[in-house]
Length: 363
Image (cartoon, rainbow, N blue to C red):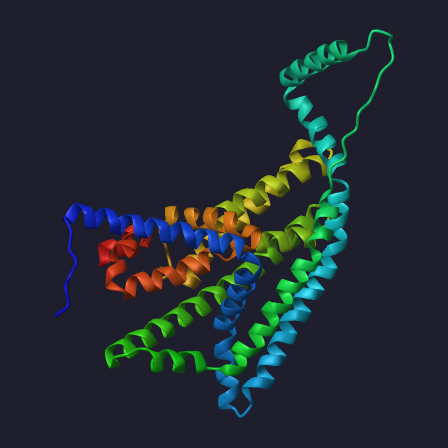
């Protein structure tokens, strides 16, 4: 006979809540401190979900999976490397000129905020008078912090190692084809669990591949249109702005806001008049509005729409855990979470939170 240990209901609930809380804290710690390993692995799996349909199509036409995998990874690597090399020059120039850009922005805004600048000037005069030594000599103390270029150079080895791990793992994932799904079916105990697990795996692959492939095409088109618009008005480095717009648009809502603000600031120092400078943010805002309100809903559809609050929380969380790359992949990871939540009964509460109001009304 097996003795069952039971306790008061309130005590069991408190213990259950404590265990869940401890698990979540440990999970966040593992994700944060294991970034060097977990981030490349996650990127490899996301890329594999997008590229596996291509591998299957070519396999049916007689091309081995290994050859397709190597070819796709080489194309992806060359594309990323070419883009990084092409943009490295403009990005480096912008970083080097960041202090000058900040000074020019401050100078341009001084005409719009005269009262604030007058107060600042008076405060600087008071500080100079207080800090002036009695003998009339002045002493200048300069504190030099590591610049952005130095910080980027120090992290270059980690970036290269992470990219190498991502591409190597991606080759093996694509070469294995459907092996992971077959292993999943074998591991699950009952026939019902096998069918359920396989259905979840197929839905995750279909949802992520559809979302990432479609969004990538939309963002590439948006970047091309914005680059053309920046070129038409004479904005410096229009290609850089197009690439930045394409990357920022992977972040719903916040990406467009950041892009409009950045374009507005640079246009303010690049053009002589305020009217000319206002064209850049207007073009950027118009393009992202058309994309967000018409193009994306029409092409992506509403079945992948997620609660706006959940999207913002996911972007904030993954940005804190994994930085800028975490911000870019926050929505795909949220799509995976929603698929699990919609298929597993015990996660119905999470699915309800992630769903939009329209999804709840239809259900």
